[in-house]
Length: 468
Ligand code: UGA
Image (cartoon, rainbow, N blue to C red; front, side, top):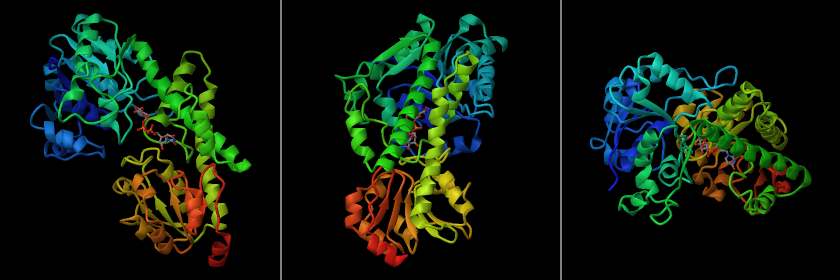
């Protein structure tokens, strides 16, 4: 049986909260710390501040047992054997990561150290951050023998974070001492030994007891770079397929056929080759910029990443142009918008291409009726309801009497829409799909004029020209 470790997780955002719940799930005692009193109160009362599959059930199972929530970092750090730092590392004006929250937390931890602790960077941070954390801890009075700093990057996607944590491709730990490595191996042992997957309540996923995840041990700097390089590569894959999609658009070819052909080469792989309106979220945009900054600081030009960013921002503009060419003029048009989050399956709107596109439409004098299964409350903070902006409680209400519908997120619910009901609700049967959720032939058969990304558009022209 795996030995229980007492773990403090500092920061209850998407990464911190999911990691904390998963550490409790695999048998550890977890103290979750956040300085947001309101959030801690909500968590203690049984609330869940973010939309994540399996998270409510898991917190329900472990709350008042092996997981607790507090604002008291000092007490949590004093009790814990390992302290995970999962606070935000937002992008600063110059493109680098703003590490001031990490700095504050590290200083405070230093003042609570009363025995050996492993301090773990879980936030995405530039190479050399572990050395800075070490320096901050020492400056604030922690003796060098009383701690080790470890890098343990996460590869969690929002929405599927719990499954990604419990069924990882790999667990990466960057360590410089065997003492710290031992603690880290013990923490992940329920997964790496396969023990967790035999539990009756185990969350289902790709890993099994006979196929557990590997644990990769490397230097702390290598682990930090692994995280940035992984996100930058994934962002590059998306920009690459988007650039190919634009060529497909011009050549009248279906990008999905090309992506399938390319992705079957197992040196490339089929994932992250979905063309669309570009990547968003709290990670890729920030991490690509930060990695480029890191390279520059080390005297290396990583211009490839500048190109990745350029393609990504152009993708929204190209989609906007597509809307314009489908509708001819925009002023005074009412559009139904499906999806506001940066992708389906989450309520997160940070760096959401959908929000940017809606803002472009508003500038052009359109009015919009918005629907998203989870992100509407958050969206209202940036797109306030008013004469130009309405919110609907489902897709059909949003579509009622609209000049066209836009698909900006890949929610499963959208793909499962009743197309007959949608067509009947719209004033004109036009769908402009930024996520390629529908089959162009099926849309044509249903009487839609349908535009998507990198796929020949299908128009039941007679009907549209008549109705416009
Ligand atoms: C991403 C990574 O996938 C995680 O491995 C990583 O841990 C995380 O960032 C992080 O650094 O914390 P996430 O931002 O939750 O996870 O979202 P993804 O599922 O990777 O999607 C990112 C964006 O790319 C979304 O806007 C999505 O719509 C877009 N995307 C993704 C595409 O446009 N095409 C694709 O084929 C895949």
